[in-house]
Image (cartoon, rainbow, N blue to C red; front, side, top):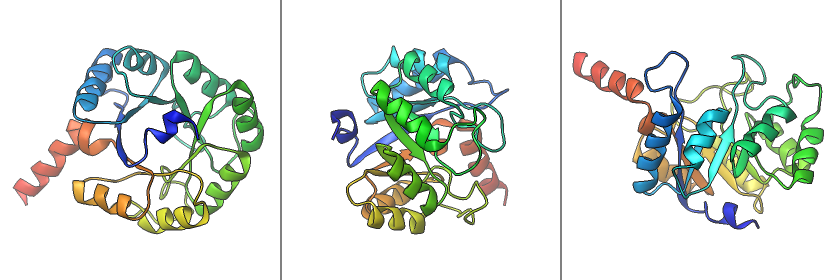
Length: 224
């Protein structure tokens, strides 16, 4: 197993992303957020966009999982081979791609995309929305399987917390492939749950790096 992937085992990955129009959407700000997460013990940083990948790679020593979001529907997480290669060229140690069965904008299949990336020597994280996606990603040769898209593709109900059922299915079916749990891990207790369920690592984003959402949670609790 690649040492970068091995280094994630049993640890926390922090996702540092800001949405369009938000005050924190700036590469320098995301790099500062990533450095703060590294100081807190994050074993890796997941981030979005070429400028953010480059800025964060220049600040942290831990591995960077890079992706490039384009669009809002269908396949928009690193949707094409060109996007994936650009993420690697910007400094990503691992590139995260949509691993669903939906049509990809460049017309390539998941297999074709992964094969090209593996030929480049790249490490690939498959963002899955179902067990069928995980099977396709594993068959294609992805290095990491993730629950990132569970509840967002119409194949599974969106759970209020992490999709522990899908995580369990993936861990059971692919015991030799690292399975990372990502999506709606909002508390330390939930993070512990996913690790106890067999996750290789846990990715936490909103609950750590999105102050607008966190503020909303507390405001709603105070005003109830």
